[in-house]
Image 1 (cartoon, each protein chain N blue to C red):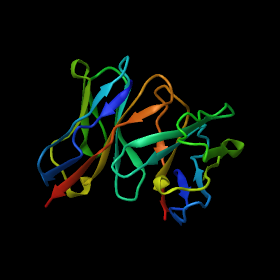
Image 2: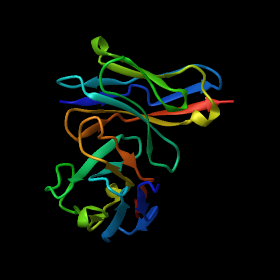
Image 3: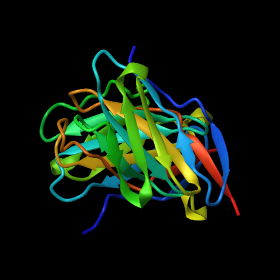
Length: 112
Length: 116
């Protein structure tokens, strides 16, 4: 069955520290991959997406993600976290059609 | 331009009552999705509309749930005889088209439903 796994439910980092959020997928073929951010009381905002080609994808707000086919992973990274990055982050995958599968999310807390 | 809007933003209802949740997608977007987000869970797909095609209702959890999309624009999600387990945030998203590289979803802020 197709699935997206985010192994970390909560992550806490200090402001200015680097960040990596993990995402693994299970699909028959390489899906399109996405990272979204959800701030409290808000809908989801797309941070970045991977379709094909360069495995390192740049997104908004200084985020990047690296696709690793051998590990079925699409981890999100940021070199230096800001307090405003505190939010919930969702990894999602989509095959060739319209249906998305979302991970359960990782809630990021940033310490001042 | 205007994004996806949803109303109401919060809804508190009593068990057994019916509720209607509304979604106004971005103008011109042909695809529309409804998701349910329960506490500590990811987004659960409920239903998908694409233009005038028959909707994909495969994610609706029971026959108490229904949705329609009038005129290819506004959509209403209806939950009949609400139960406490229906309490969740209901998110709507629209997309310029389904699938392909242009199938990016734009989300509304959601409706938080609380069933007492």
